[in-house]
Length: 107
Figure 1 (cartoon, rainbow, N blue to C red):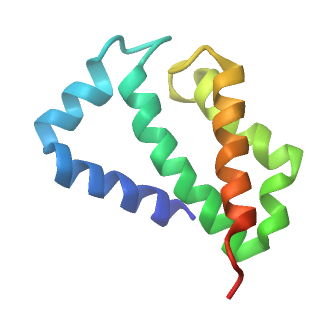
Figure 2 (spheres, rainbow, N blue to C red):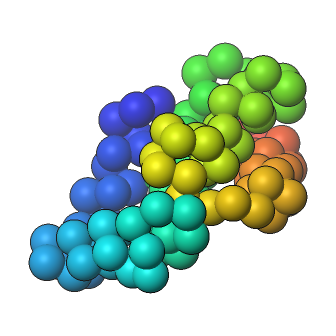
């Protein structure tokens, strides 16, 4: 799961370049509290984490409250420097990703 998450970041680096990613991830608009680009990039990475978790542990795994809270807390706590203070927004994003995973056909 971690490797899939990080692979998404490698794709971002390819798209935005190292200087671009460093600038956007670390400095825009702020390094703490309201880091829109960091939250955006991590949403893409954690969406891949959610998908990989469903593949490994089963789709129902992503509906577990403890897993949901773990992912949400990465955005709204000090784990990534309180990158996004709006818990409700992150919870809605998580629920949308989880719903899309649950709709995907199983192999």
